[in-house]
Image 1: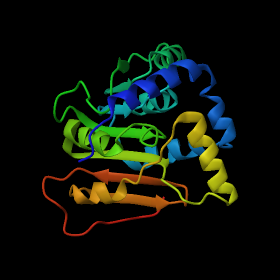
Image 2: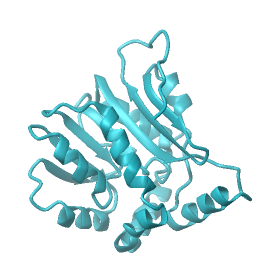
Image 3: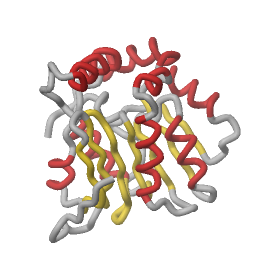
Length: 221
């Protein structure tokens, strides 16, 4: 497994601390596509009212706000390395008593094994260093039978077409390196419930299993 580069993690931490106040403009650049996939993934996750959910790279709290509405009798824990984005998150989600915010590294999560019923991460796995390490940590803290949901930019070589150029600009602005997680998810014996490849990005919902499934069942989002 690729090891995490802690100098890169520090660079990402500093970058997001500096630009946290601009982060929500990102949704404008994406013309609402990001928010659509947040809601779409949430509808596919099948969260129970009493679920305990981890939101990785919770950032300014758009996911956390949506998740908190679903788990009326459970709780949402938002994890992020950037203190500045967590401050915005806390302001956005004032009064959400089901939400707890934790500053920490996704590559070394401060949670016990099997602590969560579901793991959620939108547009975070493409900005973290060593996303394969983060995936391993997500599986560690997820209960057997729990679901994990991701949507993120992929590593792209489409440098000259419009979407490729947009991806490169986004990567420059937010240190988004891209991630290709599906092979790693399958290697770890997870059951893929939903998958969609939309050229520069991918969306995955998968279930943690005790044993590798005989066949992965995929449906398009």
